[in-house]
Image (cartoon, rainbow, N blue to C red):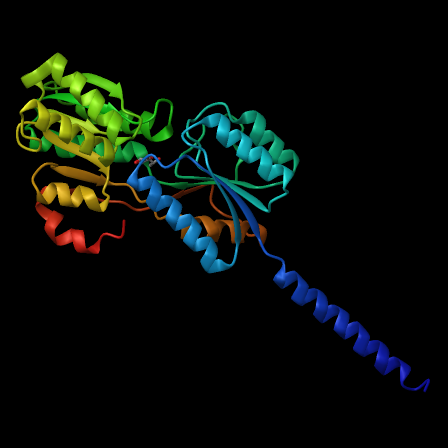
Amino acid sequence: MSKRKPVFLVALALMLVLGSVVGARQKKIVVGFAQVGAESAWRMANTESIISEAKKRGIELIFVDGQQQQANQIKALRSFIERKVDVIGFSPVVTTGWEEVLEEAKQAKIPVILTDRGVDCADDSLWVTLIGSDFVEEGRRAARWLAEKMNGQANIVELQGTIGSAPTIDRKKGFEEVIAAYPGMKIIRSEIGDFTRSKGKEVMEEFLKAEGNRINALFAHNDDMAFGAIQAIEAYGLRPGVDIIIVSVDAIRAAFEAMIEGKLNCTVECNPLLGRHFFDAVEAILAGKPIPKRIIVEEGIFPQEVARDVLPTRRY
Ligand code: GYE
C-alpha cells in the first residue's frame, strides 16, 4: 500500500498540470470593440471584417456601434473596462477628447488598439498601436490624379467627411498640399458632408446653387458622399463624370459600378478589411510579443479606365 503512494501522487500531480493547461487553453479571449457607426459602405465592410475574424478565431467580441457620437463610444469603453475585457479595440470618431477614458483603461491595465482612425493626444502610451490607412497619402493621391486629369486647371468643390475626424483632417491636408503647386487649381467651396450619401447630396445641392456651372471638379472624402453628389448634379441638369469630374476615396464596389456608368472618374483605395490585422495584434499583445506602434495597410488608386477589369476582384 505504502509503496503505491508515490505513483498515485505523481499521477495526481500530472492530472492537475494537464487540467490547468487545458483550462488555460479554453479560457476565451474577450475583446471589446467600439465602432464609429454605420455611416458608409466602407464602415459596413469594416464591421463585417472585425466580426467575422473574431468568429473565425473563437474570440468573444463585444461589439458596440457608436452611431457617430463620441459620447456613445466613451460609454462603451467604460463598459469594457468594467467588464475587464482582455483588449479594447476602437475606431475614434474624432481625434480629440480621449485622454481621460484612455487613462482609465491604462489604470485597469487593459491594452487599447486603435483601428482605422487615430487620436490626437500627447501621451502615446495610452494605446499600443494604430492599424489602418495613411489618410494624408490618400488625399495626395486624389489631388495628383485630379491635377493631371484637369491639366492643372480646376474650380474644385470639396465634400469633407466628419468634422474633427482623422480621415477628414488628413485627406484635406494631403489634397491641399499637392494642389498648392498648381496655381490654376482652386477649392472654391468646402463643407462637411459627414461621410453619408444624404449629406453629400444636400451639400452638393448648396454648392450648385451658389456656384452653378463654375464648378468643374469635385473631391469627395468618401464614395458614399460622391454618390449623393452625383444625384444632386443630375437633378441640377449637369452630367456627373463629364461636366463635373469626380474623385472620391474608399474604392467600394459601387464606386466601380459608377465608374463603368461614367458618373465617377476615379476612386482612391482605403482598405476596410482590418479584421485580420486587428486580431493578429490582439493575440500578439496577449502573448507578450512586441508590435509596431503603427501598422499601415497597402492601398492603390483606380481610375475609370480600369473599373471594368477590376470590379470582379473587389471584395467590398
Ligand atoms: O473613408 C468613410 C468612413 O475612417 C477611413 O470612414 C474611414 C472613413 C471612410 O465613413 O467611408
